[in-house]
Image (cartoon, rainbow, N blue to C red; front, side, top):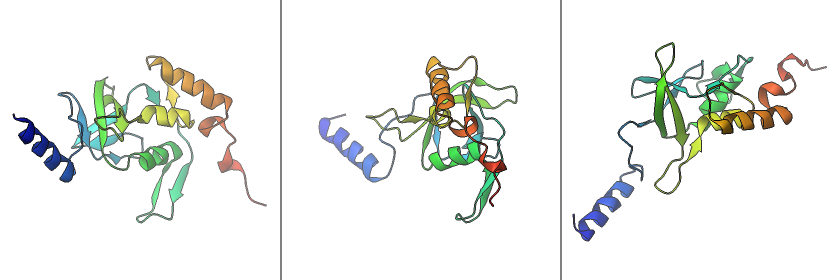
Length: 161
């Protein structure tokens, strides 16, 4: 491909809204639908975030959204962050048969994007499992020390006066 043809193809891809990165052969890329259990589906494939556990929390409702969305707080945090395309690298399968993957948002040709599991752990809405990357365990300890998310005050049990 000549330089002019390559430049033209790149320009067309950018103008058509196609992501600037090319998905690897194993990557799953698309707009996810987040389920109440914290899993999500992309192109009909059910995916769980690799290396984390989402503890059960009280359900909360986003009444400012239409339709109103009610789910556990960890699920709402995930749903808030996955606006747009998600890129997932499969790591295996769960006991439930779902694909376990490390998933990123805001990935471009110049940026790896943000790891969704790390996002949840840093805010205290997920726990690192034994086989998780070392960084996840460090992030969990920091969230616990800062009393974030599930490590914080049980706001659901506080009643107004």
